[in-house]
Image 1 (cartoon, rainbow, N blue to C red):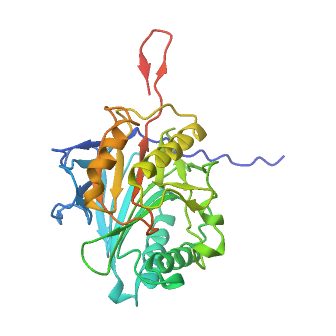
Image 2 (image 1 turned 90 degrees about the horizontal axis):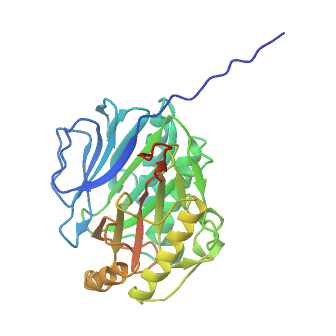
Image 3 (image 1 turned 180 degrees about the vertical axis):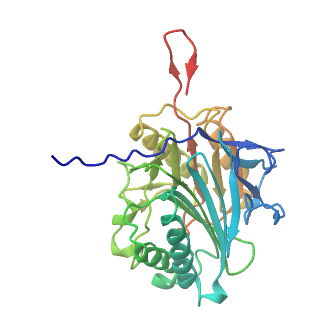
Length: 333
């Protein structure tokens, strides 16, 4: 009689994301420290300068694991790993790859190829920040060329299960493409929004290659990583140039993703990033969010261009695993 070997996935340490003004990259258990608009910290691979200007006093975004963390650099890649979780990032310059399409293909080929050889091989969530995202007409728009390059880079490494993702235009160094990601030793569950056509199924009018991402990813610890979400229903943008109405529609989409993941309302464990195209809209967007989100929900406001020129605001973030009440009346997460 022949018996098949059963290989169990490694257990993951607790993972969390929080916003803190005084967070330090060398604190125990720090997997990544994202610094919005601040100077880079070249001495530690975990401290990454994100090329987006804060529109309010911005805290740092700290990824924590309840485990020992090891980190390093390999060529252009910076990485940190611990407890079955992996942070990986790289900056690519378009001038070295013939433009944004080549830069995106290179970035994803390098990142996915490196991750595939690790225990934390499951690509769960990716952020993409590129310069002048809306520049160009028709299929030559830079976001559309980015999508072509991204799909090609994913395809070279056989990636068929799309991660959650964000793509935002920055006003920092011309030609800079920054890509960073969260990976794990266990797979997540990709989720879609029933109010929206899946991005990877968009019709041809949005470009030669549809965007390669899932609307959200339920992480193996039960929490949710939410992709960049805007006022899109079906596949059409709504509320052209109306920031307040776009905030309302975006929040409906966010709650649809929470429902798909069977998670409750956003709370203090649900840090959100709010990307705003025009700095002059910040106050109106902030006020609109105040009526739709609880005061305890952490949020950071960043200036960034949305992938469609008619959209003025986009939100991504996290939703924590709900706490479970035990028989003794205590709670655990």
